[in-house]
Amino acid sequence: MTDTTTVVGDSTEASGGHKHLGWALVLICVAQLMVVLDSTIANIALPFIQHDLDVSQANLQWVVTGYALAFGGLLLLGGRLGDLYGRRLIFMTGVTLFAIASGLGGLAQNEVMLLASRGLQGLGAALAAPTALALIATNFPAGQARNRAFSVYAAMSGVGAAVGLVLGGWLTGLHPHILGTDVSGWRLTFLINVPIGLIAAWAAPKVLAESETHPGELDLPGAVSGTLGLVSLVYGISRAGDQRYGWNDGLTIAFMVVGLALLALFIVIERRVQHPLLPLRILTNKTRATAFVAMMIVPAAMFSMFYFLSQFVQNVMGYSPLHTGFAFLPFSFGIVAGAGIASNLSSKVNPRWVAGTGTALAGVALLMFSRLSIDDSPRAILQAAGNGGHLGGSVNYWTDLFPFIVMMATGMGLTFVPMTLAAVHRVDHRDSGVGSGVLNTMQQVGGALGLATLSTVAVSTINDKVASLMGALGSAGHDPAVAAVVGKQAAFTAGGTNAFLTGAFMIWAASLIVWIFLDVKHEEMATDELPEGVVVA
Image (tube, rainbow, N blue to C red; front, side, top):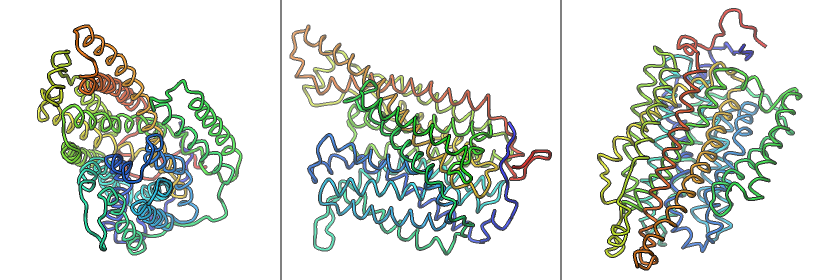
């Protein structure tokens, strides 16, 4: 497929016209860490938030969903605003808004105030995340410098998820005395972002060069249809993953159908307007299209691993929230190591080999998680119920979990770096913001779709297992209610391991896509120049 993307050859822009590239990378990665961290840090605080603010069970999910909807739905628009009005300006606006929203969430006195702050956080993240990625693509020249920058960026994305569990577990257990008032620990999970975001916004003009601007070219019809389409689709998918509704629910189907229809309208609009929100040439390049599809599937499996394994470690093995967070810390070291290896190999080995190996490794790790087993016999369940224990006592962290957490992380590091490089390869500097927005959107939609799919697989298995266990306990002459709590551990283990197995095949499908379609050479990835003879639009 012919690439018709214009390449900006101005070396000043490529390097950002700045000598502070090291500090620029630190700033960008701190902002990325803040955004990713907030996706997981609030999860552990949910029971405390529900108790303090009297949030209904039905609305508690919106603490997470509200953020995800605003973030996923506005990413394309956030990336394009950076292209048109200056990436540094939009980046500063995003991190400032994120900091203010975090402060409002930390000080929330009721459910409405908290949920509004989460939506505002999502908006800030949608402005900051794609412009952060675009700032790397345009400030760092192609080759070793950009490879290393993306390896650090990719590592931060993975580290944030693991660190969020540790930090969330630690902060929710604190009750500090601030300004004469006892502060609930969950509020600190929000308030910690305030100084980080404000310092990042203050430092941005000092270390980041501003990009060229193109005001007056905003595609409003595309912005409205694309944003509403993504919000509707992400909400429909998230609703499908909620066992209260499922895939057959009328509103679930309606939201997904409306979302797809609006996105189809968005594509029609983009083909006709002079200055589209999403230039379709970004999607028609084979290398980038492969990266986008793979990066929609891979994060889905990774986030699902965190979702199911963190519950298994807490509910079945009996770990505390903080202990659970520390159990995932090796993931941080593994993804840093994998990203570092990928960075060094990117200038010597074709990305197909690096990313293909990474996805294959991650699939093996999920396969091994699917083999987790416990004694779920009626006798074991009743014995555990009698002493208030957990069924996961036979699972050894160091032999059954640790090696495969590290393997999963290393595979993700090997995958994220070459896939991110491929996703922004030879995108016109004028389009790098929305190009980064597409990548982020694929990750968000893929994560929601993957979690919904694997949750459906898990819930179906859990329901069957519960019925089987309760029947066995009842026929043995025992009151099923006695062992109900422990029985749920056995049922969840069955559902979670089935989800891991499904996730393994999902990520191996991504691996197959990479091996077959990602045929770009590492020599091409080291330059922004077009090959001789390629027609430039």
